[in-house]
Length: 57
Image (cartoon, rainbow, N blue to C red; front, side):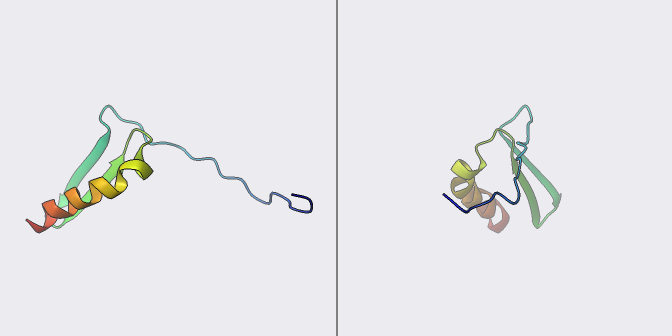
């Protein structure tokens, strides 16, 4: 579009690990979850209930 100027750019970096999901339990009421295959936006809404169910049950 005429008159628009890119002021900033962002370069994303995907997490990488042998497994698709990295989960850790540093405290009984805390979960750390990371997508490690570049599919985080696709699977986040499916994984979140599973993680939360594990905290509640």
